[in-house]
Length: 476
Image (cartoon, rainbow, N blue to C red; front, side, top):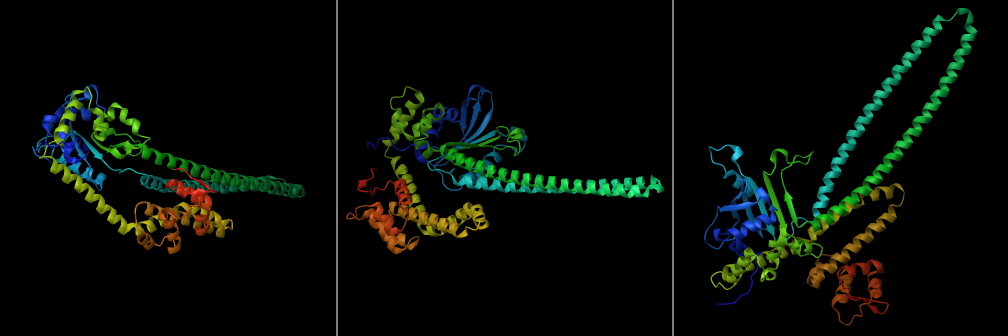
């Protein structure tokens, strides 16, 4: 026997050997009850495998689970798949649901469906924040247009009412004039003069009130717009933070305006569990929760060697046996190799498309981020100053990306091909990082690059690159 030790449970073959066969039923039941937080009558007490081939495989685990209340649930578990996971899960769910109903059975007999995706990479990241809030911004613009249309209609109605009132006033005045005594013509003229003067005064007062009201409305609109922008920026910041902290995402079918499942209650659920996020410092405490004890096992099975729970004792035995199984290990090794080859292929594609993606992302991000500021600067006559700020921010981004490529191991000639900086400036950054003869002076680097020293320090700190500042070496 060869002692290979604990092999990685997140490998497709290992995971399916732990949970994908009827002899491992008790492990999968405990896994599902924990992850899905099923309790009382909703707790799973038995399940039936629908793809129980007795061979090593990396296919999905399909089961029909039975709860205490005799409810049946279609559950699919897949691990480590890559590419378009959202659409992939939807496609697979439609196939499972389609084949879960016989031709003669009514639709009400379709079991509820749960799909659990366990991913060893991040799929839900900060890029979703831009898409989400960009969509919301368009909706807000539509709402504002509708409000403007309503205001215009109200203004038209008010104008019509004013015209009707004026016509009524004229008719009343004519009637009064006809009823007056012809002998009092001189008094009549005096009264008309007074009336005209009174109307002129009233009109002037009304105009002032309307102007004041319009100014107040404009001021209020501007204040509301500023407040909305502030709230929006805060919401985006908070949303991005929540995306990083959310390790387990659950999607269902809901009515859009009420955000309730209503007629699709418990009908379908998609779970995305991102293992990498659980490893982050801010999320690692979540592994202590009962719900995620199996995720902790997948990340660190050694921590369960002395566990007193039967399910984990059995899981450790299976894992140890697999690590010593000479017939199994080639499957495991090949899968690990496939994963490494996949990562290498992705890095090659990244290299080929890096410049194009960078230019596109830079253009989109900067055009959106600076649109409002640019318009305001143009109106205030400081376009030249704004362009200077924009140029400095782009230069800062170019320096940061150049350093990032060096830190990822790209060669000098490869980095120069992107032409983010001049060849001379690229050489300066390269020598600063790798030339042992340089004194790592931040002052000299800032002078050579003709770039702000404090901004340069911020970039170097973000990559934990050491430098000398006034003779004192930065600690890393």
